[in-house]
Length: 73
Image (cartoon, rainbow, N blue to C red):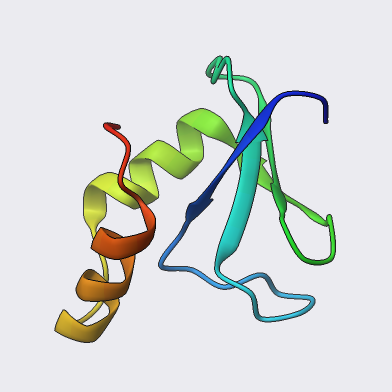
């Protein structure tokens, strides 16, 4: 991907276990989200937004996500 942004999902990549994901900086609903580590396709941006809205599973995940995801959703 050319111009992209990294963000953290509470759900880990099934291939490598990383929570760091990458999406195009445009963030269209149908933009693909890939693992920033192994580049595996994870989901579409609108699906990632749903996961982000549901929030982290516990308080420690919430603190990590707050530190990594400093942009407005």
